[in-house]
Image 1 (spheres, rainbow, N blue to C red):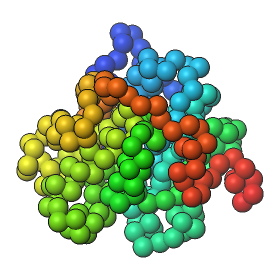
Image 2: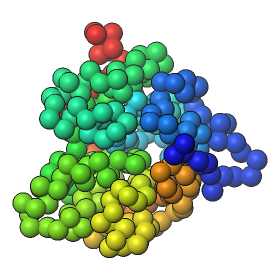
Image 3: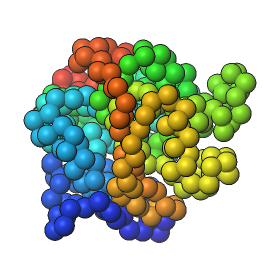
Length: 284
C-alpha cells in the first residue's frame, strides 16, 4: 500500500485525533485512491485545534477548502464552527475526483462523484454554512483573486492540491515568460495573498519534482513563496506528518504583518459564479 502512518505531531497530551471530529462521517464516502482514513482524521484534528485557538468555537470566519474532493474537511469545519462560512472549491483536475474539469464544463464538474457526495452530506447534516463551488482554479484564477489587494477569506486549506493546479498552469507561466519553477513559486506566493491563515500540505517527489530540484524540500519552497508574497509569515509545524506516496507535511502559515480584513461575507460568496448547498440538493 502507498499509505503509511499519519502522526499529529502537535497533539496535546492525552487528546486523540478522533475526539476532534465535529461529525461522524463514513470512511467509504470520503477516502480516495487508498489514502488511509487515519490521514483524514489526523489532519483534521491538527487543523481544528489551530482554528479553535485562532477563532474560538463561536468564531465567525470565512474558509476556502481548495480541492475539497468529497468534502470531508469542509463538512467538519462547517459542523464544528456554525458561525463560519465554508466553501469547498472542487474542479476535478487531479486524481481524487478524476479529470472532468480539464476540458469539461461547470455542469460536468457538478455531476462528479465528489461534488455529489459533498452536496448530499451538506443536506444530510443540514449545514447552511457549507457550500461547494464547482470550478477550476489555475494560475490566472489565483492571480485574479490576488489582484483584489486584500484577503478573500480568513482561512485557506490546500491539502495535496497545489501540484494539480500547477500542472494545468504551465502554459500560462510560459505566456508570462516564466520558467516552470518561477511559475510555481509565483502561483504559491499569489495563493498566500488570498488569506492571512493557510493550512498547506505539499506532495513529495515525484510530484513537483522541479520544485524539489530547486529548493530541496517543502519548507524551503514555502519560505521562498512567503518571501515572494510581500507579506510577513510565521510558520507553525509541521502540525502533522503523513506517509502517503512519500512524506507529506502539514504546515500552518499565519500572517504576522499588518493584516487587512478579508472580504465581507456577501463579497466572499460573490467570488464564485455558482455555489451548491443544501437547497441545491433538494432541487436536484
